[in-house]
Amino acid sequence: MLLQPRKTKYKKSRKGRIQNYDMSAKSLNYGFIGLVAAKAAYLKASQLEAARQTINRHLKRKGKVWTCIFPDLGVTKKPIQVRMGKGCGSVKYWAYRLRPGRILFEIDGVDMESAVTALKSGASKLPLELKLHTKI
Image (cartoon, rainbow, N blue to C red; front, side, top):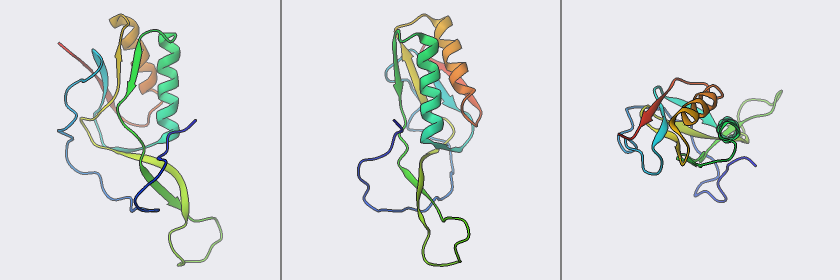
């Protein structure tokens, strides 16, 4: 099941630009190791779900995995062969505006070696540069 909000304040929103470094999510809150964005990107809900499933499979469902972001931006698309005008189309997929420095996933309850391999395999499913961050 893909992540999407139950209810939004507005039906459609503009995509906007991703600017600045994310200072709010610098430290790990739940786990001892996490996956941090090095560059800005728009993450689809399907990409996020694929990464989460891969991490869970590598951990063999031991330990705990936290997803620290939620796709709340509805990206619209008009159908093919539709004339210009008449609004922006219907919501095609849900995405998240990811700023650099934001923590995506956190892991706890497993050894360091398996956590690192799980996060690296999950990072391979995402279309951006990511790095590991540990709590010391």
